[in-house]
Amino acid sequence: QVQLVESGGGLVKPGGSLRLSCAASGFTFSDYYMSWIRQAPGKGLEWVSYISSSGSTIYYADSVKGRFTISRDNAKNSLYLQMNSLRAEDTAVYYCARESMTTVTTLDYWGQGTLVTVSS
Amino acid sequence: QSALTQPASVSGSPGQSITISCTGTSSDVGGYNYVSWYQQHPGKAPKLMIYEVSNRPSGVPDRFSGSKSGNTASLTISGLQAEDEADYYCSSYTSSSTTGVFGTGTKVTVL
Image (cartoon, rainbow over all chains, first blue to last red; front, side, top):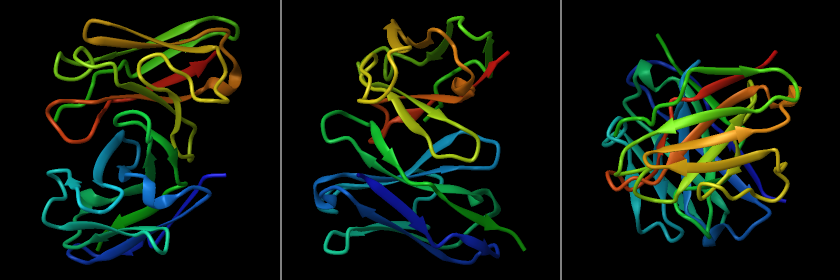
């Protein structure tokens, strides 16, 4: 069965860095676009970044552009999000999600999320 | 990119039907049949319930149905059950971005 397991969250000071990882299993990871979605405490969902199956196409939300870097290692079935210059407003649960291969902008499987807290 | 507009809360009694609206523009909901709905229980990850306006993934009960009229999509839950109490988010493809856009979210309460 499809599994996505995030790790790497934690408490970090403003201006600090964190690297999130997402380990995928149960499907051919290299065939799928992958995304990072975040949810601030008590708030809605925000599409943070996505990466194409080969890694050649990448998108960032304006709120993280220039600070976050998405990447993937298809040999390791893993997705990453390098987060630099973190701000208080980046505090959120970060989910990795798989984009459906058969339709557009549809996230058919999600991980359980990892909490990132930016605070001094 | 502005979020799609959903009512903050909707409630109903067990067995009743409720409908959640999701209003966008002709650049997103109204222009494409790529509306999805997600269910999120407290402390859990979102789960895909509807895709392409009205299609249900395998395993989603047929009590859940989707539709669209103009710039507004709707999720209807028929025969409301206690386990349906959750937050629901719509999303849509948008010509304004390379990703989709989410709705503001609706809390469904089963009375």
